[in-house]
Image 1 (cartoon, rainbow, N blue to C red):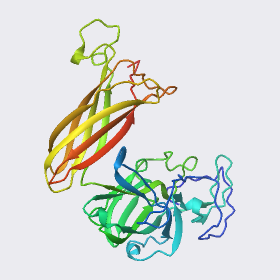
Image 2 (image 1 turned 30 degrees about the vertical axis):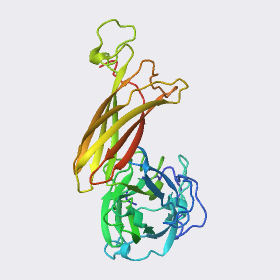
Image 3 (image 1 turned 90 degrees about the horizontal axis):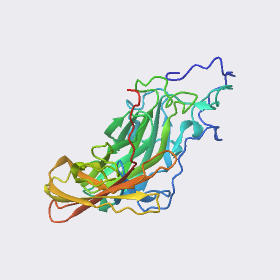
Image 4 (image 1 turned 180 degrees about the vertical axis):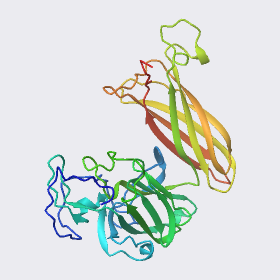
Length: 367
């Protein structure tokens, strides 16, 4: 099959007859367990947690889509041509999972001696489908479909194509704001693990590690935010001698820093899809986590005109002396938060995004 390693020397093939379904589970596990509780917008299994967009955000809503989805394997690769996204799929699968775990695919008959043997394998398109009801309170807000890990994917809302992604190592996120109006909608995801980016025999698709699985793993969510929101926050600690002086150094201090202090440059990316411009204020804060000692880190506030589109907001935090550097044995972390307030029309729109980072410089000792 395409994309699969030949294991003639390590496996024994007993040539079983193919079967579309295996009731029992198999030997390897990819599933990420997600806490669940009832939600009026979705079938049982939904949960509201903090909204994330390259960080943790508790100003929006996040609704868990884990649970039972409609499902179909596309053995003839005709699903797009036959418009499977516009009809109800007949089989079911409980996400997050892989087709291996759910018992779908062809029996392999493998008995490998150098790795775990797969009971079933599926290489090709597989369709996943779920119907959701969008509440009226979501009208005018940004709505994203978040798939934490999957393979080459395409998404439809009802019969309208919504986008595609092929990353193997980052979440797939789709902006469905214009398509998910209040009311009932069907979300269909096509995952095709026969389509691989040119990565070679890497661990994401190798039979001895992840295998070239088909499925959707980790968090599967609809994330709801205001039309003015913080899309990302990046932190760049500067630990160079010029900007992070030695506490015992009596030389003049660069940037007005006191001995032992250092700086961390912050860049937030703000998106305004409201169609309006307005004044905005941003507050950057930081705290040390995982340590009993408290460190007082002064907050930084800044303001600007928030125009339609994407803008960057930059700030510089001064960190006090004594904050331990990150290492693998004592992973001291900073939790950095940016809060925003913007008034595109007559009401304030607020958002918050947090990330974690550590203080550590990596350099080459021999050039």
